[in-house]
Image 1 (cartoon, one colour):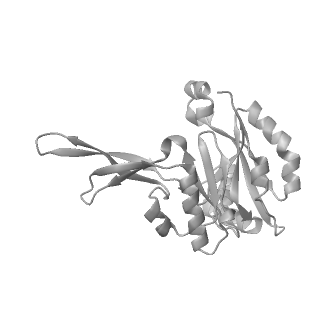
Image 2 (cartoon, rainbow, N blue to C red):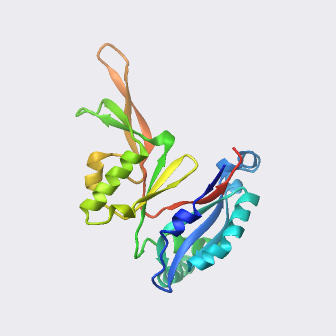
Length: 251
């Protein structure tokens, strides 16, 4: 199964300043190499193979063959952090993290970890982008009544979610066409500028970060007694996330 999102994503990458950087990670995930994970453990199976700091479309174009080859040979995936970073801000962040590490006498930290944090945990961006991660098997929203009991569910489609996103963008005075989708292995990512989450959540309660408990079933334990079964559900929203750039996997 090959998913190649280079053409889609490169249309939405812009470089307006010499300090602009987009981050591309090539990562091997345990679920893509289950035999290795079983033999060595998930920590050994998961690897950051390579990171590219992209300063132009021309540079990225020259690296496409190498990125694809690394993904194939290492059984890995390429991901793009969709919000551009300011290289100066990230370098200042790196300097601060390095000084903090020294002050804390934490000399066991790996330098590459500091570098990754400086660039990938820096939430500043001149062109902030959010990601809605819509997996086909995680599109159900559960509802509760005023007493907190299960009150039904709704299975969303990607097109319904996109309609909400575009309406919210328009309400914020932004061009709805700025939202777009890229395919993933199990669904799609909607990539969009920020919008009014409070308003969007009134239409769809799955637009949140992290996890929440939803009531999914009422289980009667007696004539007038019951217990509510809950399910921990991960929200679709990632405010500083990365999307799939390339993968080539055998199903």
